[in-house]
Image (tube, helix red, strand yellow):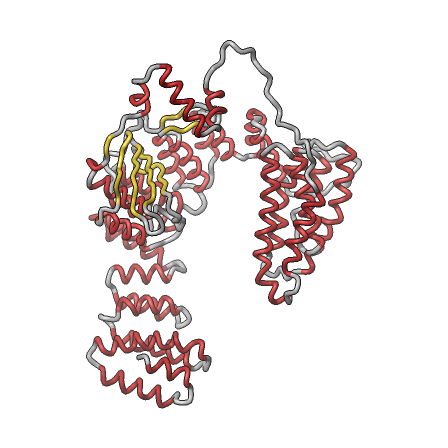
Amino acid sequence: MIGVDQLGRCKIKYGNIRMAEKITESALKSLSSPESFSRGYELYQSDAVFDTFRQGAFLTGKCEGSSAPFYQLSVQLDEGGIQEASCTCPYDWGGYCKHIIALMLTYIHHPDAFIEQKNIKELLGQLDKNALVCLIAKMVDKNPDLYSWLQAAVPNTSAKPQPAQSRRKRKTEVSKTEYKRQIQSILHSLRGYRMSEAYWMVGGMVDQLDRVRDTAYEFLESGDAQGALVILTTLLTEVSGSFEQFDDSDGALGGFFGELALPLVEAILSADLSKAERRSLFKELEPVIEELSAYGIDGLDVILAAVNRGWSDEASNELEDYDFDDTILIEAKLNILERQNRVEEYLKLCLEAGEYRRYILKQIKMEEFEKAVDVAWKTLTQANDALMVAKALRDTGRLPDALRLAEKGLELDGSKHDLGVWLGPIEETQGQIDQAIQSYQAAFTSLPSLELYSTLKKLSDVNWDNLRSALMHTLQDSHHANVLADVYLFEEEWDQAIGVADKAGEWNYSLIEKVADVVLPFRPDWVIQASRKQAEGLIARTQSKYYAIAAGWLAKMKQAYLSSGRKAEWLSYLDGLKSTYSRRPALQAELRKL
């Protein structure tokens, strides 16, 4: 697999990478949801995976699909297992999709099914210079963007050094009138609705405003700060002028203004405004921001501070200065420096501002691994920051450094769930079972789940009793009744699961239903009692919309009666309901179905 970095250097991802000795089904389960793994296993067993190839540590294949004839799969392996995987299916619900699971199960059980292909050096090494040039020319014809990468990658020793080209200056100005018209059209889209109706539509309107803001970001990314500034100031002034027309009880519009601060500060600092332009912009924005503050929308003073101060940290004497949280200002400056590739200034500001994670990630990107790791060990305090850095190190082939930092992250502050579920499968794949257990347990402690419990049980072997005691202590001391019930059901401890359902109360009907469905063959009396309570409570509301739900509970009750050989009792109860509620035709219609 070939990639090209931002400097135009070719990276062969499967070059000298040492793959994992053994990728296990257990590790796959940890990387996917139970549903994805189960369906992936079905696909694997039905031979839905085909056209499988391997280039060193890079696997490709196809899998039959339901919404397409097939999906294209690719998996990058390293010594920690699956480094990266992709599938052309639309799955986006966490963990790997069933198609990736099917491909990997095929690889685990039938590695010979993957036809070994030559790596790039072997494939191209047999071509002479003319043939290679022709091949590259054809590639550029199909993908013209490759030309700029090649131009950056190929040294040109005969040419004189050229000064860096500035971004092309825009020949036409962004029309404030046009964007004002567009924004007003969005704001007026809720006209004609009562405020109670419009309340439910504000979120959709904000989504449209977000897209306008995203357009301004595109102008920023392209180097046109003036264009971005026109769009963002128009957004701020037009939306604020209509703010009182909407019911913003859920804070959607308030949140929109909060998310407008950062790009607007970036545009102001990037636009290289003259003193006269700054004065004019300040006078335009100050009353708008003060009015929003009166509505309780705070945090926008940083915009005025950016106009006043510009890039410097000193306020101008000509304009009023405001107290503000400099977090957004620092983030804006860092974004600008990174966008403009002012590396030394960027790194210096990262250290001065204590933005160590950004500093470390930049050093990794520059392949200054020793500096990155050294600062990471000295400065990171949050588990999620350690995870982000560890992922970046692994992506560059520095898995040993990534593992050491991730293991340290388990000792840091913050939730360790994401870190634990990322680190656990890698440790497991490498045969480091004790470290894998430590990772999964840290994840479980932060956010318990039956999947983590099951994984830990499978790995712990003879030490399971002690570990289970710790896990149950975590569950019983937390507000995770659903997971506790899942565990008891998994262990077939029916009475304990029933106890959790009873303690949760009748309002937690989803938990009661889950327990009832599982324990019905074993504790029919409890299912009868719980189902009757739910059904009669719904019927007592005397609203027909609840009758179908009540009938669902009655169906469970019927099943429990029949499974315990008490059909006569069920028929007697059903007849009693029909008689009692004979004047409720909607309910009678549901009862006749039972």
